[in-house]
Length: 391
Ligand code: SF4
Ligand code: SF4
Image (tube, rainbow, N blue to C red; front, side, top):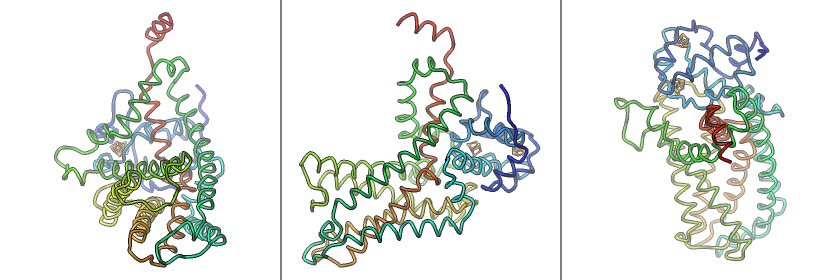
């Protein structure tokens, strides 16, 4: 294997955080304490070493970058106070910027002023675009789609989805190729175990949060289950996926003619109920995560990059504005603010989703790919040969 080295790699990663990592003298203490370390995966020292050597290709192909849950154990015990946990977070930001061929992620991570201007402009343009097609504001009941026609929001959603999907897929494929190559994945190996690995990734790790639950909080430090980090993280993820599913189901029911999008339904209507419960999970997860960051409750919360705040705050605002909209819908008299809330809500969601491949949100795709590569595991040649002869 040939190594292409960039002597400035460590300095480049430091633009994304990790101010203290230059103090590392490779003692290996962090690897010894990391609950995820195994014989084959030496968190986080191997990734630090790759950065020190400047071998960016190997660093970008490292699945440990993504499977680290930033528990902060390594930081707490580093004798040089080099903050290896924050280094892993900075290296993930660097990786997101490197997988993004448009260069937008780099700007959003490294220029706080431009990030804020960009977000405000994007939200304002979205709201203005919708407002140009506005209709009446009925006051007997809140008929949102008489104010903004459903097809405008629908078309905006489809256009946004295509942009995000293309940028997200490009980044994820780019990342999967690098991680696959660096971890010696072969086509035969993938074919041999793709389904089992998919189950282990989606059901066991992503939805079940197994590693996070078992390994990232020690028995002594475990607070009540509803305050444990895995539950906060899972609440945000389950809540987001639930809202995504409820929105998708609403459109599908419209297409098959069961219910038109935007028609009034009681709160116990299944799709509305799914959306409400998912929203409550998301609101809980984001609120607790914000409070933890404000109080600097643990090692990971002590360093808050602008991207960490933007991600959490946009999620929180979009959830709260979604609930405000729901309340307005069920009030006996239609409040005019309900119509403005619709514009605000869609503008914030547009910010959150359109920038997903370029911000912290992207870690959801990349972590899933890394977990999948990890679940595939290199298959012993004898096992592959046996499977081939059985075919
Ligand atoms: S980050 Fe700290 S604990 Fe880890 S190898 Fe460097 S000096 Fe040692
Ligand atoms: S933050 Fe936790 S999971 Fe990540 S490398 Fe450090 S000890 Fe391991």
